[in-house]
Length: 147
Image 1 (cartoon, rainbow, N blue to C red):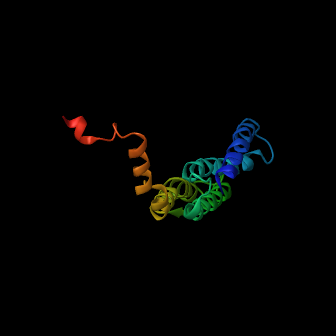
Image 2 (cartoon, rainbow, N blue to C red):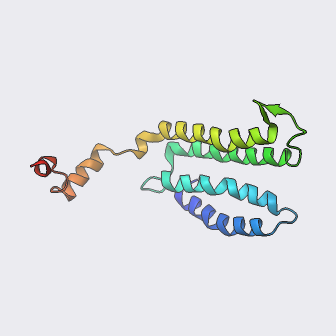
């Protein structure tokens, strides 16, 4: 998902999430769940896009995060209504475990590892520092500020 596609997803997700949150009938809760998973991933894609608007190596972890969040939403719907009756995982009812692990812990791990994997592309390069020194020589002179 490039920057343009992520911006389109954000533009479409906002009114769809609002409509599906307000209208509580039929397929609207499922639509809200799908859109709720797309929105934060699209925000991450906008932030991770390079100057050329492409994601590069960050596309794989972002796509994995989107797929994982969509599967978590399916899991939440599968355990809806039977919280106490269903199986227990790690000391929690299955619905609570899916929510806790799938919406908080797993995305944290996936996004952190994905950022670490694609960090070199998104960090400051020597060319960027040279460009800053060329444009703003007086503000980057550390010795002049310490005097």
